[in-house]
Amino acid sequence: MKDIPIIKGLPQEGFTASEKNLPQTGGIYLCVVQTKDELFGIEKNVHCCYFNHNTQKFYFDRMDANITYWIPIPKIP
Image (cartoon, rainbow, N blue to C red; front, side, top):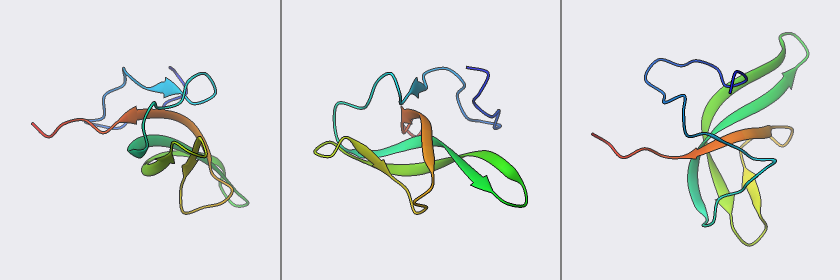
């Protein structure tokens, strides 16, 4: 998973490619969101996104966002 940005404290294992598999239930997930910016080019960041099981789509506040990976939100220690 070399495409996933390394973020301190974020587990690097366990992310699922959204093009291969979608969550089985609706809810909030941590997602790698890829956006295109005229000034900075393509950016990848991690955000909380909503997955609607009925539409089989992730929703984020930017319409042009591409959800590339997702993982269930980890339990708080």
